[in-house]
Image 1 (cartoon, helix red, strand yellow):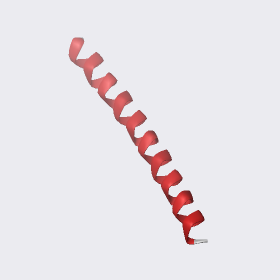
Image 2 (cartoon, helix red, strand yellow):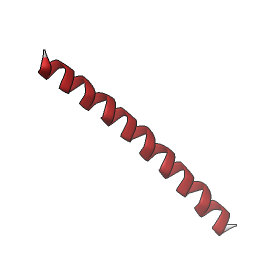
Image 3 (cartoon, helix red, strand yellow):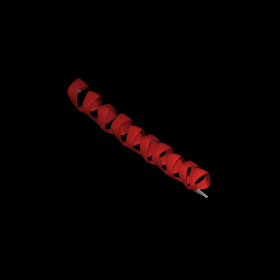
Length: 37
């Protein structure tokens, strides 16, 4: 059971990391666009 729980938590961490990464990429894209204009 501990092993399965570890896998679930790892998946959650990966999902949160990817979600945060996408937000950062969008935020950086907005900054670069505003800097260009």
